[in-house]
Image (cartoon, rainbow, N blue to C red; front, side, top):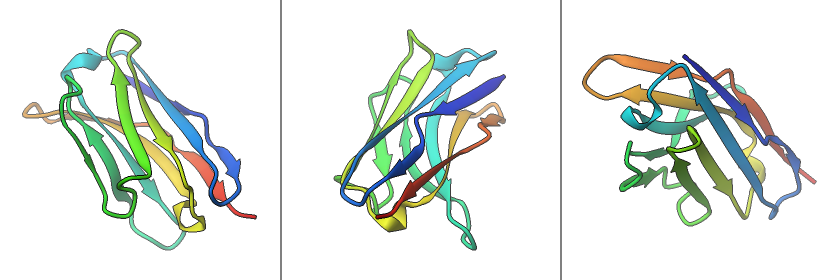
Length: 117
């Protein structure tokens, strides 16, 4: 299985970015999908999760109201729309797929998002 992130880069504070994660080699609709991030010197943290049918989402308190996770099972893709970005959102963002109850999980390689003026 493979997860490939795209859409990262540099943005000024207050700006927006949209991340995508394309999955292959797995039955995408079986997997809950998440975005994690890791800043230098910090542990990897959960940003947002969406269940396999897309009917439930959860967010870290630090991004609630600013970030939106969504998925398109027909395209095997999960998205993260990030608005009102802050310098503290600067991190490597990782896509994560988990087949709950079966012990199967996969990580993407990560993608850098930099928020600075």
